[in-house]
Image (cartoon, rainbow, N blue to C red; front, side):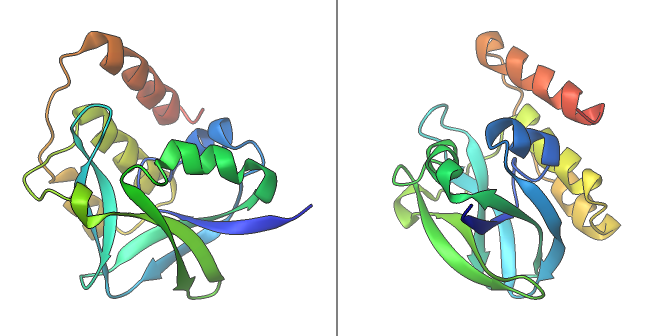
Length: 168
């Protein structure tokens, strides 16, 4: 079965979250990538909030590297919003080689955006699950977040957060 490597950095960091979405996903490990930075400035087309993005130049990012079957790539592309604000890129990750990930199109970047509270919490929990360095997790925890008052959207997202906190 043909596979590819995926570098996760946002809400798909947590293995439980990603395997619920793409069941073949298998964690290969984690890695630090110098010269990139993490932002919550990608405008969501669904809710207008800030989603994660990575850009060249910065203090470095931590990634979770997964192996996923090619047959499930269309699912991940849809979840990631490929062609709808995100583009696919290949990045060279030390110890793992070429991995695909997704970066925001310039037309969808707005540095004034903030994430919803549940979204930021998913990223924090993913970082905790991989035991990324304390200073990196502290930087993410310090990001401002907006309380999502739309219960029909936030309730199921908080249920996901609760499940991830409990390890699945």
